[in-house]
Length: 162
Ligand code: RP5
Image (cartoon, rainbow, N blue to C red; front, side, top):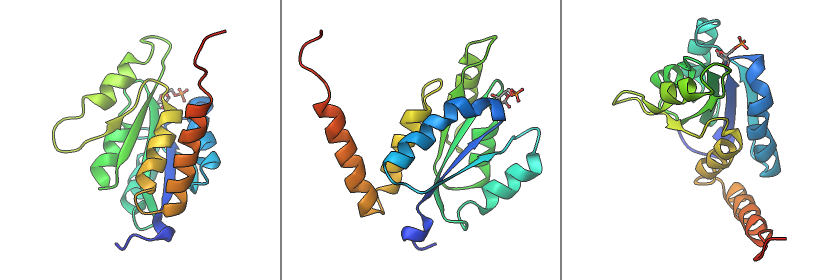
């Protein structure tokens, strides 16, 4: 498929409504960076058909990258990655019992052949930045807004603590 501005959207998907308070952070930075995105609840085990439909049509629907947040036995990112060749960025969500170590290992320990780019536990903000960075390879406007945002961030860091 030809790369153009029509296929530069980011999909932000999550396993449950309960992940949204974290995944909102991806939305926040993508909005700031003026990257087009869509937010969906897609559960690998509760809505498996929705997941297959989403992942297998993501590329033709114009998504360039998928951010997948999930907690516990967080198979969502890996399952989605198995159904598309788009880059999949996994955000392990913190859980009550194991503090997100379960989610982290489920994503970071993907077996050879189907990678998931795994962010930190609850690292949805960085996932958004990384998704924008991927989109910026084929979208000059996004590249400029990302570079501007990075410059402002650098300027905001004081030399001495107060
Ligand atoms: C996972 O189970 C979701 O991604 C969520 O992090 C976790 C708990 O889901 P709920 O029981 O809160 O819906 O599938």
